[in-house]
Image (tube, rainbow, N blue to C red; front, side):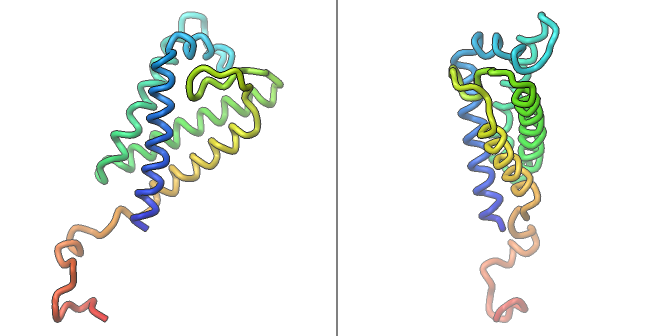
Length: 152
């Protein structure tokens, strides 16, 4: 199961790293697109864009260390749930809002974005629930020595 956790961490971390870097490369464009997706007061869109990008950028480094990985998966899951809710609301209302998830784009948000976010959300939850490898006490006995009780 440790490989599942590592695989989930790699996938979720890479997606969040690419997303954060893409938003930073065209931050003004991303900040201008926020009100079309989330109803925010006029002066708050840029603040929400800063918070979103900052939190996205925090996910990959949190996923690197086993001690902080649960926090990284948790943050990723919360962000993905919020993104999915915003996209679902936009799609349900029939808005043709452009997806700026990974930088400048003219592709409108749609069901494929909901599926993508759902898969990533499931991966974040699976990664958070997957065991983090051998417990410290068992790791001190690895590899097994002659006479080790766990030997086949």
